[in-house]
Length: 256
Image 1 (cartoon, rainbow, N blue to C red):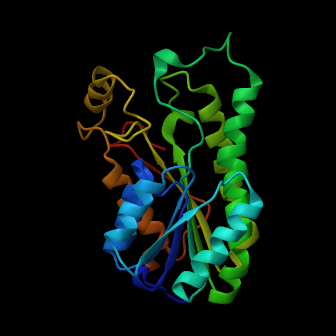
Image 2: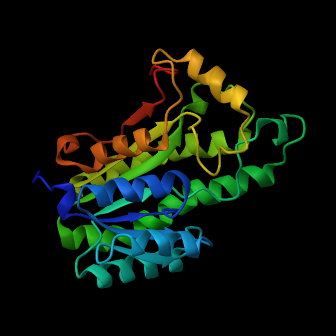
């Protein structure tokens, strides 16, 4: 397999304007990639990020739950940069806040909540990858990095719907890796713990973050920047022979 440096890549980051997605977008831009910053409603945040990286970033609105939207986003990204999309980071998180006290417990949660998370995490990833397959073929290779969680290995908080959807996304990661590998496309997952701090985790009490940090061998809660750097690994030539893997980036709280 040929090596393709990050600086040669056209990267689509879903939910790339805020929180963890913004840090992922910034990490790729730092390494010289051209980045399509996908957003649903965060137009101002996306525009601010693009303005800071004129010529190397473009803001593209689209709902990952819509295949038509993602077809348009991929086409617009390729047109903006004059080159096919080579790398997809499935980061978008639909309608979820990491506030354990406010989440419904086992006796209260409805399947509709699960369906909403499946549609965002699994459906969104599938829509985006399928939309990018033509570009991968034109480029001669592809990189897909899905964002997961360590909660399906260590479910310390009752995020039943979110956790189940991310576990399903790991299964999709592995089945896509098997199916798309012969086409030169690698598919992997990077799973974080509770990050200090993103928009989604801002609702988490500091005492919980401190407890998580204390429980890790490294004695700290993972930052969005640290997780973003791990995403770069799976897009880089250094991981060209890695497929279907789940890398947990959480200070060693979960070892798998």
